[in-house]
Image 1 (cartoon, rainbow, N blue to C red):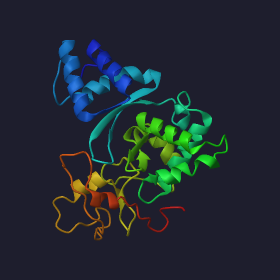
Image 2 (tube, one colour):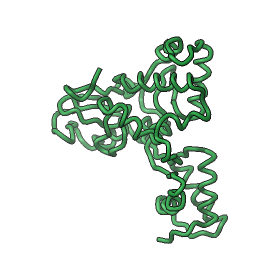
Image 3 (cartoon, rainbow, N blue to C red):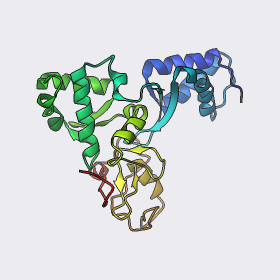
Image 4 (cartoon, rainbow, N blue to C red):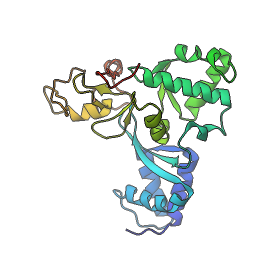
Length: 262
Protein backbone atom coordinates (compact mmCIF):
# COMPACT_ATOMS: atom_id res chain seq x y z
CA UNK A 1 0.00 0.00 0.00
CA UNK A 2 1.30 3.44 -0.94
CA UNK A 3 2.01 5.69 2.02
CA UNK A 4 2.57 8.96 0.16
CA UNK A 5 0.41 11.85 1.34
CA UNK A 6 -1.31 13.34 -1.71
CA UNK A 7 -3.45 16.43 -2.16
CA UNK A 8 -6.43 14.08 -2.05
CA UNK A 9 -5.45 12.93 1.43
CA UNK A 10 -4.86 16.53 2.51
CA UNK A 11 -8.27 17.63 1.27
CA UNK A 12 -9.92 14.72 3.11
CA UNK A 13 -8.11 15.68 6.32
CA UNK A 14 -9.01 19.37 6.00
CA UNK A 15 -12.71 18.64 5.52
CA UNK A 16 -12.77 16.19 8.42
CA UNK A 17 -10.97 18.75 10.62
CA UNK A 18 -13.66 21.31 9.86
CA UNK A 19 -16.42 18.84 10.81
CA UNK A 20 -14.70 17.07 13.73
CA UNK A 21 -16.76 13.94 13.15
CA UNK A 22 -18.35 12.51 10.01
CA UNK A 23 -20.89 9.76 9.35
CA UNK A 24 -19.52 6.81 7.37
CA UNK A 25 -21.54 7.34 4.18
CA UNK A 26 -20.46 11.00 4.08
CA UNK A 27 -16.83 9.97 4.61
CA UNK A 28 -17.07 7.47 1.74
CA UNK A 29 -18.47 10.15 -0.57
CA UNK A 30 -15.73 12.56 0.50
CA UNK A 31 -13.13 9.86 -0.14
CA UNK A 32 -14.39 9.39 -3.71
CA UNK A 33 -14.59 13.13 -4.39
CA UNK A 34 -11.06 13.78 -3.05
CA UNK A 35 -9.63 11.02 -5.21
CA UNK A 36 -11.45 12.19 -8.34
CA UNK A 37 -10.56 15.87 -7.89
CA UNK A 38 -6.86 15.16 -7.33
CA UNK A 39 -6.51 12.16 -9.68
CA UNK A 40 -5.67 9.77 -6.83
CA UNK A 41 -6.29 6.02 -7.14
CA UNK A 42 -9.80 5.28 -5.85
CA UNK A 43 -11.43 2.03 -4.75
CA UNK A 44 -14.78 2.16 -2.98
CA UNK A 45 -13.73 -0.46 -0.41
CA UNK A 46 -10.37 1.14 0.44
CA UNK A 47 -11.45 4.04 2.65
CA UNK A 48 -9.75 2.60 5.74
CA UNK A 49 -6.50 2.14 3.79
CA UNK A 50 -6.80 5.73 2.55
CA UNK A 51 -7.26 6.92 6.13
CA UNK A 52 -4.31 4.85 7.33
CA UNK A 53 -2.06 6.86 5.00
CA UNK A 54 -3.35 10.09 6.56
CA UNK A 55 -2.79 8.67 10.06
CA UNK A 56 0.83 7.83 9.30
CA UNK A 57 1.45 11.48 8.48
CA UNK A 58 -0.52 13.06 11.34
CA UNK A 59 0.87 10.71 14.00
CA UNK A 60 3.88 12.99 14.74
CA UNK A 61 1.35 15.71 15.63
CA UNK A 62 -0.41 13.34 18.07
CA UNK A 63 -3.52 13.21 15.90
CA UNK A 64 -5.44 10.23 14.57
CA UNK A 65 -8.57 9.59 12.52
CA UNK A 66 -10.56 6.99 14.45
CA UNK A 67 -13.44 4.82 13.37
CA UNK A 68 -16.32 4.39 15.79
CA UNK A 69 -19.97 3.45 16.06
CA UNK A 70 -23.06 5.36 17.11
CA UNK A 71 -24.67 3.72 20.13
CA UNK A 72 -28.06 4.92 18.90
CA UNK A 73 -28.26 3.32 15.48
CA UNK A 74 -25.03 1.40 14.88
CA UNK A 75 -23.85 3.69 12.08
CA UNK A 76 -20.12 4.05 11.49
CA UNK A 77 -18.46 7.41 12.16
CA UNK A 78 -14.98 8.82 11.63
CA UNK A 79 -13.51 11.43 13.95
CA UNK A 80 -10.22 13.30 14.17
CA UNK A 81 -8.90 12.69 17.68
CA UNK A 82 -6.25 14.59 19.62
CA UNK A 83 -4.02 11.94 21.24
CA UNK A 84 -1.90 14.43 23.17
CA UNK A 85 -4.77 15.38 25.46
CA UNK A 86 -6.93 12.55 26.72
CA UNK A 87 -8.76 14.40 29.47
CA UNK A 88 -11.56 16.94 29.46
CA UNK A 89 -8.90 19.68 29.50
CA UNK A 90 -8.86 19.42 25.68
CA UNK A 91 -12.18 21.32 25.83
CA UNK A 92 -10.67 24.14 27.89
CA UNK A 93 -10.20 26.48 24.93
CA UNK A 94 -13.94 26.46 24.25
CA UNK A 95 -15.43 26.28 27.75
CA UNK A 96 -14.92 28.08 31.06
CA UNK A 97 -13.87 26.25 34.22
CA UNK A 98 -17.37 26.08 35.68
CA UNK A 99 -18.81 24.97 32.33
CA UNK A 100 -16.30 22.12 32.28
CA UNK A 101 -17.26 21.22 35.83
CA UNK A 102 -20.91 21.02 34.77
CA UNK A 103 -19.89 18.74 31.90
CA UNK A 104 -17.91 16.49 34.28
CA UNK A 105 -20.88 16.24 36.64
CA UNK A 106 -23.17 15.52 33.68
CA UNK A 107 -20.84 12.74 32.58
CA UNK A 108 -20.95 11.35 36.13
CA UNK A 109 -24.76 11.21 36.09
CA UNK A 110 -24.86 9.63 32.62
CA UNK A 111 -22.33 6.92 33.42
CA UNK A 112 -23.69 6.11 36.88
CA UNK A 113 -27.22 5.77 35.51
CA UNK A 114 -28.42 2.34 34.39
CA UNK A 115 -29.80 3.77 31.14
CA UNK A 116 -26.78 5.75 29.95
CA UNK A 117 -28.93 8.90 29.95
CA UNK A 118 -29.41 11.89 32.26
CA UNK A 119 -32.54 14.05 32.34
CA UNK A 120 -32.30 17.78 31.78
CA UNK A 121 -33.85 18.27 35.23
CA UNK A 122 -31.10 16.25 36.91
CA UNK A 123 -28.40 18.15 35.03
CA UNK A 124 -29.88 21.60 35.70
CA UNK A 125 -30.09 20.76 39.38
CA UNK A 126 -26.30 20.42 39.33
CA UNK A 127 -25.87 24.06 38.26
CA UNK A 128 -26.06 25.45 41.80
CA UNK A 129 -23.79 22.71 43.18
CA UNK A 130 -20.69 23.70 41.23
CA UNK A 131 -17.56 24.30 43.32
CA UNK A 132 -15.91 26.65 40.82
CA UNK A 133 -18.77 29.09 40.33
CA UNK A 134 -22.49 28.44 40.68
CA UNK A 135 -24.50 28.77 37.49
CA UNK A 136 -28.05 29.98 36.91
CA UNK A 137 -30.36 27.47 35.24
CA UNK A 138 -30.65 29.69 32.14
CA UNK A 139 -26.87 29.70 31.86
CA UNK A 140 -26.76 25.93 32.34
CA UNK A 141 -29.38 25.46 29.60
CA UNK A 142 -27.18 27.46 27.22
CA UNK A 143 -24.12 25.38 28.15
CA UNK A 144 -26.07 22.20 27.41
CA UNK A 145 -27.09 23.61 24.03
CA UNK A 146 -23.45 24.40 23.27
CA UNK A 147 -22.31 20.90 24.32
CA UNK A 148 -24.91 19.38 22.00
CA UNK A 149 -23.95 21.72 19.14
CA UNK A 150 -20.26 20.89 19.62
CA UNK A 151 -21.09 17.16 19.65
CA UNK A 152 -20.02 16.38 23.21
CA UNK A 153 -23.57 15.50 24.24
CA UNK A 154 -26.61 14.18 22.39
CA UNK A 155 -30.15 15.15 23.38
CA UNK A 156 -33.47 13.49 22.74
CA UNK A 157 -36.76 14.43 24.40
CA UNK A 158 -35.02 16.13 27.30
CA UNK A 159 -32.64 13.22 27.91
CA UNK A 160 -28.88 13.61 27.43
CA UNK A 161 -26.19 11.06 26.68
CA UNK A 162 -22.59 11.18 25.45
CA UNK A 163 -22.25 11.94 21.76
CA UNK A 164 -20.41 9.49 19.52
CA UNK A 165 -17.65 12.07 19.14
CA UNK A 166 -17.25 12.33 22.93
CA UNK A 167 -17.01 8.56 23.35
CA UNK A 168 -14.43 8.29 20.56
CA UNK A 169 -12.34 11.21 21.83
CA UNK A 170 -12.50 10.36 25.53
CA UNK A 171 -12.65 6.58 25.60
CA UNK A 172 -9.39 6.18 27.53
CA UNK A 173 -10.33 8.97 29.95
CA UNK A 174 -13.69 7.32 30.67
CA UNK A 175 -12.18 3.85 31.05
CA UNK A 176 -9.55 5.19 33.46
CA UNK A 177 -11.85 7.37 35.56
CA UNK A 178 -14.92 5.14 35.64
CA UNK A 179 -13.27 1.73 35.48
CA UNK A 180 -15.72 0.14 37.94
CA UNK A 181 -18.78 1.54 36.17
CA UNK A 182 -18.18 1.08 32.45
CA UNK A 183 -17.51 -1.89 30.22
CA UNK A 184 -16.66 -2.62 26.60
CA UNK A 185 -19.16 -4.20 24.23
CA UNK A 186 -18.66 -7.96 24.01
CA UNK A 187 -19.28 -7.83 20.26
CA UNK A 188 -17.43 -4.78 18.88
CA UNK A 189 -15.09 -4.29 21.89
CA UNK A 190 -15.72 -0.53 21.97
CA UNK A 191 -16.73 1.42 25.05
CA UNK A 192 -20.44 0.91 25.81
CA UNK A 193 -22.35 3.65 27.64
CA UNK A 194 -25.81 2.55 26.47
CA UNK A 195 -26.01 -1.23 26.52
CA UNK A 196 -27.85 -4.36 27.54
CA UNK A 197 -26.12 -6.47 30.17
CA UNK A 198 -26.26 -10.17 30.95
CA UNK A 199 -27.73 -10.56 34.43
CA UNK A 200 -25.68 -13.73 34.97
CA UNK A 201 -22.12 -12.98 33.86
CA UNK A 202 -22.24 -9.19 33.47
CA UNK A 203 -21.02 -8.83 29.86
CA UNK A 204 -22.60 -5.99 27.91
CA UNK A 205 -23.57 -5.28 24.32
CA UNK A 206 -24.50 -2.09 22.51
CA UNK A 207 -28.15 -2.14 21.44
CA UNK A 208 -27.25 -2.20 17.71
CA UNK A 209 -24.69 -4.97 18.35
CA UNK A 210 -27.26 -6.98 20.32
CA UNK A 211 -29.79 -6.52 17.52
CA UNK A 212 -27.37 -7.84 14.92
CA UNK A 213 -26.05 -10.68 17.07
CA UNK A 214 -29.46 -12.05 18.03
CA UNK A 215 -31.13 -11.39 14.65
CA UNK A 216 -31.03 -15.02 13.51
CA UNK A 217 -31.71 -16.60 16.92
CA UNK A 218 -35.23 -17.64 17.89
CA UNK A 219 -34.25 -17.81 21.57
CA UNK A 220 -31.38 -15.47 22.42
CA UNK A 221 -28.61 -16.65 24.72
CA UNK A 222 -25.63 -14.76 26.13
CA UNK A 223 -22.57 -15.17 23.87
CA UNK A 224 -20.38 -15.56 26.97
CA UNK A 225 -22.23 -17.77 29.48
CA UNK A 226 -25.04 -19.07 27.23
CA UNK A 227 -27.75 -18.08 29.72
CA UNK A 228 -31.08 -16.83 28.35
CA UNK A 229 -30.92 -13.15 27.32
CA UNK A 230 -33.81 -11.48 29.17
CA UNK A 231 -33.91 -8.15 27.31
CA UNK A 232 -36.10 -7.17 24.39
CA UNK A 233 -34.00 -7.53 21.24
CA UNK A 234 -33.64 -4.18 19.43
CA UNK A 235 -34.67 -3.96 15.79
CA UNK A 236 -31.95 -3.10 13.29
CA UNK A 237 -31.71 -1.76 9.74
CA UNK A 238 -34.51 0.72 10.30
CA UNK A 239 -34.98 3.48 7.67
CA UNK A 240 -34.80 6.20 10.33
CA UNK A 241 -31.85 6.90 12.59
CA UNK A 242 -33.55 5.93 15.83
CA UNK A 243 -34.17 2.65 17.53
CA UNK A 244 -37.80 1.82 18.37
CA UNK A 245 -39.26 3.34 21.52
CA UNK A 246 -39.45 -0.10 23.11
CA UNK A 247 -35.70 -0.45 22.66
CA UNK A 248 -35.16 2.96 24.25
CA UNK A 249 -36.82 1.63 27.35
CA UNK A 250 -34.40 -1.27 27.17
CA UNK A 251 -31.33 0.98 27.38
CA UNK A 252 -30.44 -0.73 30.63
CA UNK A 253 -27.09 -1.75 31.99
CA UNK A 254 -28.32 -3.91 34.83
CA UNK A 255 -25.39 -4.42 37.22
CA UNK A 256 -24.34 -7.90 38.20
CA UNK A 257 -22.62 -8.49 41.51
CA UNK A 258 -19.20 -6.87 41.69
CA UNK A 259 -19.35 -5.16 38.29
CA UNK A 260 -20.76 -1.81 39.34
CA UNK A 261 -20.07 0.54 42.21
CA UNK A 262 -22.79 2.83 43.51
